[in-house]
Amino acid sequence: MIDVGSGPAIVLIPGVQGRWEWMRPAVQALARDWRVLTRSLPGEPGEGRCSTEGFEQLVRHVDALMDDAHVSSAVICGVSFGGLVALRYAAMRPHRVRALILVSTPGPRWTPAAHQARSLRWPLLSFPLFLAGAAQRTWRELRATLPNTRSRVVFCAAWGVQVLAAPGIPWRMASRGRLAAAESFESDCSRVAAPTLVIAGEQTLDNVVPPDDTMQYVREIPGAEFQLFERTGHLGTASAPDRFASIISMFMKKLPD
Image 1 (cartoon, rainbow, N blue to C red):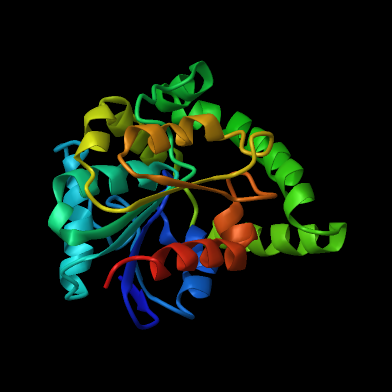
Image 2: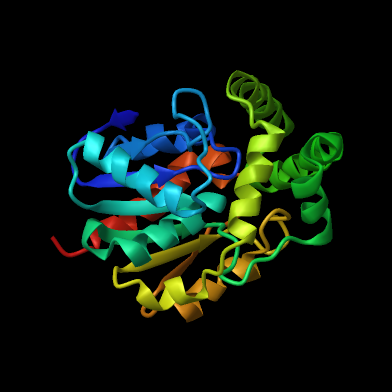
């Protein structure tokens, strides 16, 4: 478990790769002002095996994180796939959710596109194509996020080291994708009682989760607010962590005590 910083608690839930380390820049930036709690998802090193009990095991995983930190309630923030976990948690555990933040999250009616369905069915065979596409998408996004070639190369080098140290394993990612594909998240939206912030990158920069899909939550969750994460796509928590932390902090400072 990662427990850093002080003040009101925010729980960060990682994406489909399952590793909290991919959010390390955001954790460090947020910890300057807040207490940040996070951990990798079930199935990752040190987190036990994925069970056969479906999506609800991820809700219990968040329970365990908060219990271990002796936190009764917190702001729950999910990134990408982690946003689906955060949404379900807010719907099922309203007494433990001070606020909900969804970042570049697949929409409430998400179903795998054709290329995603292939990856879920044949994760190892599809992985080389996934990597090639990810490299292309990343460089296109970084050209908008970072000011010059040198800063982009430095980021890619550091990010590459991070990914190699805490890799996303294809079959684990596919297993989580299948868990989400078996669920419907529409009814969860109407059950969210906490203040909600929805964050998405630029329409032309996020080629992983279309921002229009994420923005559906603004209409589906009563009272939800939207914040555009400018000059980013899907990597903003890592490539622009200070701006990400600023967006989160502005929202958290408005919450009632």
